[in-house]
Image 1 (cartoon, rainbow, N blue to C red):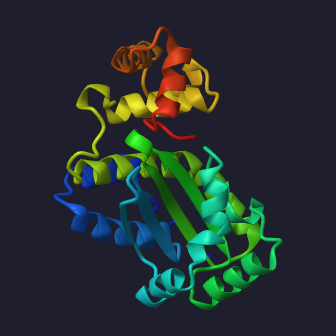
Image 2: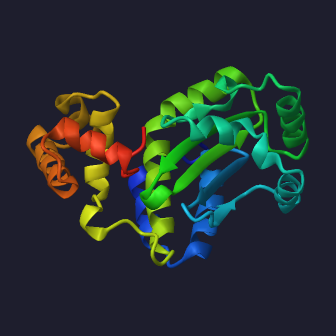
Image 3: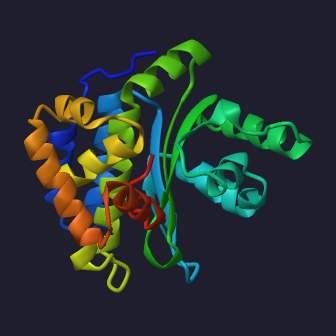
Length: 242
């Protein structure tokens, strides 16, 4: 399938995100990510509590216009499925049983979207809902392997991308007092998905003492009583996603 031609490093991606000057830069970055991961498409799209939207990605404009004209938002199993979940979703595990959903999928494939997809739902401040999606044309086993191997980095990348996009929209950015550093986000995310402190420290190539510093800092910023409380608050506020 040609995945991971250049295997982008997460810290390099974060640096590139932090150097972005505006929404136009995010469009350029998402195109680079698509090429580096070796997938057909990557899309980022959000809707805030007031119904305002922003999106960037690599879908052909013809498909974007067709999606809107056909009113596919109402029947798209990806949108419906992800809105009900907090975890990343492999499209194959969604409900495509209805006639309208199958017709939509056939149309999407015909327009080059691909028969495989992986979407990460993100919930941000003030009712914001976003999706970070990769899609590709290939077989089930290869796609399952790709998403399994890259799940952690994709989840973190989705969070950073969303946080950066919100910063460029006045009035929609999270309270700076609640903002976690990249390392704090990584530490909390690993604990949220079930790693113990030793495993999390090893994954981040830091000592358990350093990990404890990150976790305590995050707990303080979140106003949490303990680590479990901090993880719960971070998840509920969309500060981290799993």
